[in-house]
Image 1 (tube, rainbow, N blue to C red):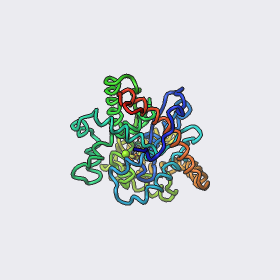
Image 2 (image 1 turned 180 degrees about the vertical axis):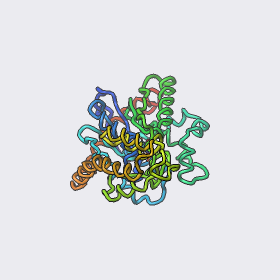
Image 3 (image 1 turned 90 degrees about the vertical axis):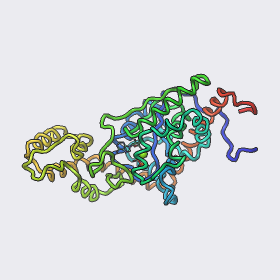
Image 4 (image 1 turned 180 degrees about the horizontal axis):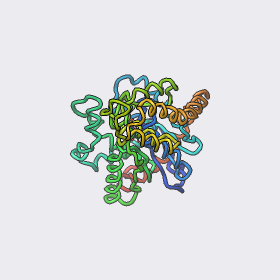
Length: 348
Ligand code: ATP
Ligand code: MG
């Protein structure tokens, strides 16, 4: 049997000198300020310190979206563009596409032998996915996708995984798989840690627990200023507050969660909170100030985004080059795995 795509020899993988980050997105739609809080800020902050691999997880997209697949190509490019716009540096970070790395699904096969079905059924995100996508029961692919995520992380032997709170259980599963593999076959994998911000998850503009790409409650990097203002002015706040003179609740109020995350004028935030609690400021003013704070944050991102978008072929080149590099790593990992498992009966 011949392999359809020639894999690079393992020796092309660069030696690992720094700790590694593996992080990524599903190309299901435009990135938003929730992604920034959850993971993008950490990606940018740590890109010098860690050798960073950024995955665009197109297989993962298939688990919940088999409609409109013609959009994926554009979504993939937009995802990379959004990452660059917030400050991910393509010179420092290896950006790669999951489906260009056939070693990832190969690792998934091996890893899927190490995890029981009930363990997968207990993963909390499964329930959320079924609810959010109005599904009665999961496909085999949806049930197993956290194992595929473990293959993503371990394919490049990632040490640290910056993610939002919703992905915590997947990194936990990855740790279990790494430990189990190492126990059975010898030390091949690091046991990765997750890096989850204090906020955990940024709530949606509608007050739902999670701002989500497909939930219609997000402020996107690609939104123009008018759209941002419109979204903010119609945000959910304290539902029990009917008049500006009513004392309001700040804790868990999404407008204040956003102020805490994005408003650099800390004195203003303190003052607004005090007045809100005392019934001395209206929701309109609090929101107007949030629009100003968000614009200060979003404006340079929009500018960078436009600059990168104007360079034809640039994004595709980054994806190809990054995937080539990531593939060399994944090939070396797969060799190590097969060798440790004594699956070298016909060579590796
Ligand atoms: P989907 O609903 O299609 O899965 P998503 O919004 O969850 O989309 P992903 O691409 O799955 O986006 O997630 C990318 C990263 O962003 C993950 O680390 C995830 O934990 C994080 N993230 C997503 N939404 C939020 C949010 N509202 N707050 C904080 N982090 C988030
Ligand atoms: Mg997600």
